[in-house]
Length: 394
Image 1 (cartoon, one colour):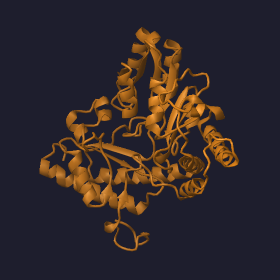
Image 2 (tube, helix red, strand yellow; image 1 turned 60 degrees about the vertical axis):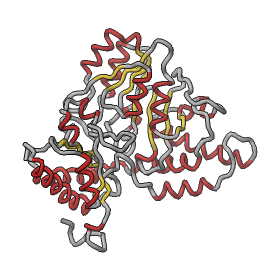
Image 3 (cartoon, helix red, strand yellow; image 1 turned 120 degrees about the horizontal axis):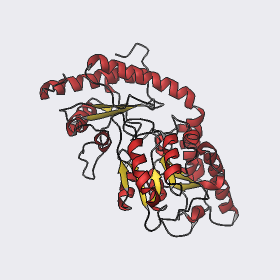
């Protein structure tokens, strides 16, 4: 339970505890101020008069700063409406006639659906949540000449497992040297060295609202040598790769949020890792038969994912929501009903396990008191449901 030093004036039971930072983060106050300030600029960056030039100068200043964080040239940053558009552009814009996309079964839907549309192939994952490199090598040996783009995420959004991008790079360069390499790094900027991990890749996607920026902002870093074609057509903005008037206020806010995330990364990672250990340790004491998914290899510090076989994620989340603890589970369909997590299924979990998944993701605003209270709430919710369902692991 929270200590007497709790920052909350009233009982923490009445406070909303947000443990869904992997879905979306609270907006950084400094980024919000930047967004408001940039909103006062009237001009369109594509224009030529003084007001337009002021907007253009801010846009290019943001591009230069984001390029530095991603380890690419200034002209290699294409601003988008978010990670989904960036992923779609990277995959669908890379393919010439007769070439396909190769990716993994544990990617975000923005990648998976783009790969499916291209008639591409999805590689499986290991039980630890890592792309199956042996399967990828086997496929590339036989079909490397048909592959136009290979997309492997930097870190998984459900399990936090960091993917072996250096090994993927070696395989692709050996067996499919003409293929472009893309990484969805949407979850990474606040916790990982995106420029370092993505070195050698042709394209990297990011999304502003995953690291304290506004929703509806993102970028695709794409090397100038990459033969990418636009999937949106219009005025030819963003190197003619992404037509449409730039969301200048959003881009300014995203840039500041990225600056805050990157400069504060070491301190935040250390603190959040400690909170995650506290969360996992507390739940392990209450639920000793359950181990988090993906703990066999490198993992981001903020995401913990569980499978509770025989339980239902929807029921778990409803009970947590009633207790003002906000978390998430597998992918949602358009109706809002929960499907079994495709990521967990791709890792070899059973349907029963995947239907009972729970993701708890922390962030820079998470406190010790919140984690301690969440352990108590989550642990008791799971225990109550497990007893009612007569789960075999209880």
